[in-house]
Image 1 (tube, rainbow, N blue to C red):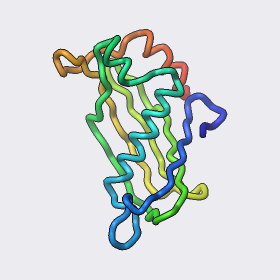
Image 2: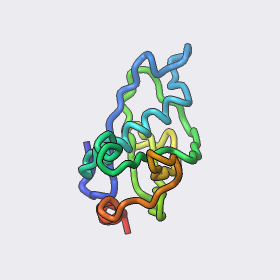
Image 3: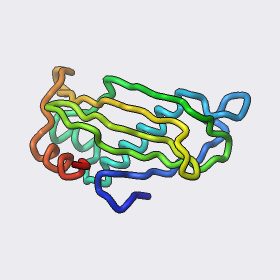
Image 4: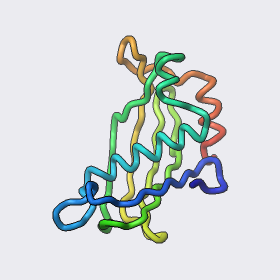
Length: 141
């Protein structure tokens, strides 16, 4: 499920009927769901459970920005690979590059910005040092 490099993460996604429109093509918004799943599993691979982070650290990670470019359609029953890579780590944010590929061909690429939010205030909060150090070690430098 993952590549050899800690900074890159590959997550397989099978396209089901529920992911498609009437023409059997993946509905454009569903790529965001695929990207979310891949980021969540990437965090799990690094040892972070988002429910546990909310309980123990009082933080959650939320999407605050997206840029998505659609190049070619995915279709019913396709086996896709979602590639996830850290682009930049800020004080309270993480910028990801994510790609949806089929057989090595990029179908959709995205830049997604995540912000660390304090659960009590729902305002941006610095990423805790214990988490930041692991993210930095996973970042492709």
